[in-house]
Amino acid sequence: MDMEEAGGAAGAVRTVSRRLVRPSIGDAPPPEDIHLTPWDLRLISVDYIQKGLLLPAPPAGGDRFVGTLASSLARALGRYYHLAGRLAVEERGDGTVNVRLRCTGEGAELVHATAPGVAVVDIAGSVYTPSSIVRALFPLNGVLGADAAVDSLPVLSAQVTELADGIFIGVSLNHSVGDGFVFWEFLNAWSEINRGGRPTSDLGEISARVHRRWFTDASPVPIPLPFSKLQHVVRRFDPPIMQECFFTFSAANVRELKARANDEMAGTATATISSLQALLAHLWRAVSRARRLPPGQETSYTLAVGCRGRVSGIPPGYMGNALVPAKASCTVGEVLGKGLGWTAWQLNRAIASFDEEAMREWLESWAREPQFRYFGSLMSGGAALITGSSPWFDMFGNDFGWGKPAAVRSGREGKMDGKATVYQGPERGGSISLEVCIA
Image (cartoon, rainbow, N blue to C red; front, side, top):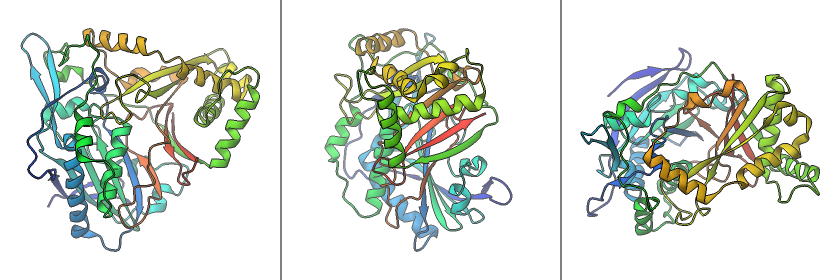
């Protein structure tokens, strides 16, 4: 039994137990190591992905309840066995290191915690997110991808916290192992198994996708990193004090914004502005007003663009990282003065400018001269926005067997001024939520 406390005095989160959950893989032979691509390795310098589900209270909690979740987690890991592995570092003796994902089956971490002083309404009852409470509902806080390789930490960890009137399941995934697509596919499988369903994906099909990492023809495999010790890649980032807010837009709201943006650009735009582009343009304009920046100051919006199905050789179900940034830049005066449609069109054009050949050249140059992602370098003096995740991930379908989620929240992962995370709205069917961080 391992007792720890976090959070404020009124809402302390107490750790009851920790365990390593090994995958249920029967008599399957030990799988091979997985080499990491430039997309994977560039994210070894950032926090774990941390997303969590706020669920109703189950009929009964306690050790037996958590034991059931551990059993279904083991079965889910049997299908996504690489998430029970460990990152391993090889020091080559020539001033470089290699990092690979070893599919050792050592296990994912499962933490059981209680927070009897925290109610569902404390987490999701306000537009303002109580960040100190929410962050305590996630494991591996402050751990970077490289830390896991150096200290042989789990690449996947889940924390099940029993609240006064609900359950919060917070999951942390090492970002160098997978992106949001991988995160939510795994969580969908775990919840489906726990509620007694049969996973829709064939085990052999998943195994083939897990191992199919995509490298350009010119890329070395594995890719040597120019450090004598992997610790040298680590830079800690202390974000400024921020307000975190959570906004939900109904499907009708989103349709209205999309129609307005396209009407404003009728006769000018050569493509349709999407619902998400219209919503993010609305956000860009609102944040620009709130920041009260001078009209001539440059502002930018960076979006994560998925490469699955967009790049030849990367299938829709690819299980590694497959994201590239797209950036739109203009002045604050243009964002505020030229309207919703014009602003949305800048985002549309940034995404449309994706160039597969340029992306391949970037991957090849990265292998020669690796550059890592550091959130501190993305702050841009309080004039930028950056958005990740997707409203198309199935978040509210994660029913573990006692009711669907009431809300989705994230941990401390990469929180900085101007970070806006996109979520499927609770209505589903076109509603979208935004988690916005502003200094």
